[in-house]
Image 1 (cartoon, rainbow, N blue to C red):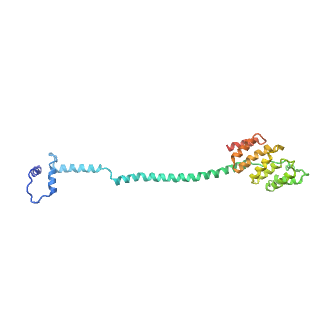
Image 2 (cartoon, rainbow, N blue to C red):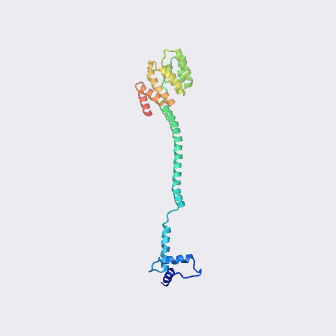
Length: 246
């Protein structure tokens, strides 16, 4: 308390100190008058220290701190968005490729599952019988029955002109063309066979036209011809294949 009284006297009538005190001393003395009278100087200073510490703890973030925190949040989001963009780009490139690779494979598999060469009436290989009056026809269909369709096709084509009364020859030529991996030629021959009802080759060729378009991967045309074939000789086969195309 003694110090407090001295400070008050100093404030009321400052002595001549001949330069012993400076501005800092005078400001300290002026501030002392605001301290609690019931507390010592040390207690007041301790309390002041505590207040300053609490204020420092509660100080708002500086602009640098704020920017650092913002970057810590934004950077992972930017990286995530960038990777999402890369993934989307990869999908856009890969999916169409997968689609077009898959479609022909499915068509080819369906064709392989359903294509069978029909037997012809021109050569009964199971009985060892043949029509000796038409040796060239016998020769052509021997190749056909043996599965040598690349050789059978030109031989049967020649027979179409030589034996126009055998109106089913175009149909068998179409089968050989399809078996020889020539679906375009097969389509032309089967459409020609559509012009006659001899031995019901119009009904038979409708089914094989569906198979020919399936071989080409033209599912729309394949479906149309199979639908037409549903009421014909190969009706059950046409219906089953058409369901697999749906």
